[in-house]
Image (cartoon, rainbow, N blue to C red):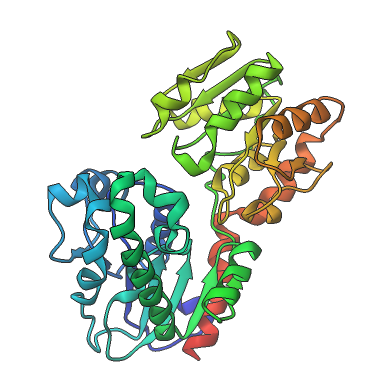
Length: 371
């Protein structure tokens, strides 16, 4: 990878990730980084062997003292000691380039030398938005004790940004948040979509159903989607699972709403291609679901805030709404039904989210720091 940029001698690279007990957008970024730097070890606070065996087979993965089964299964209970676990990972002066792929703790590792490139997938949600995210993990009676921890984590999080020689991030929305809260400039490098999986399949004809897919957790607002389609009485297919799945499904009142816990990649691609539109009501740092959708040539009904600003353009590849409410989603669905979208044009525009584009932009940024 460095040879193509004329960087010599070959630098020693370390990859650092928060933790590996789940597989989402940040872990997909790590996968691609590991492909780019195949000899680089991966440092992380803890790692579930199931995730490693499935997604990072054969990789040199090194963990902290928190690496055990209890933590893999209940990691949010250990948030207060994670900064100490990160600091226990000392890279010394063993690497020329340290790439932290972070949404929380990865930047907290220690190193004596080397250029530090921080790819920011998200800011630490439970530190910066405690009222939204902490009630999902702690009972209400614990909140008075948890809030001071969140404030301390926020200060610690800010301090870790001082270690980075270069900050990269996944969206214009995140670049603004980094400027406002970390007082740092971050270059936008859109994360990669696997366009060998998510692509326009013109053999799949469009149907009359709408689709929502992804992890069913609070901030992704599947509850609003269900309530909107209770109003609309239109066909909706939900694909996904998560801690909020049961409570969301209990809200279903329409016989036109169907829920499937999980499907394979090829099946999901077919469902996206066949959907009239995908519903995306959450405020995400980037929104991999949205990027995967347009890669399949399917339009979006999307909340206008967040990383979707870089993905969804009204009238070109979807319709946006400005309020997170069932009524706003319902109005946007009614609007999209009056519009025509060119599937090929949507998919063509989505090529900017390809893995190759991510690799080229990332390496261009790295080369500036190395030189």
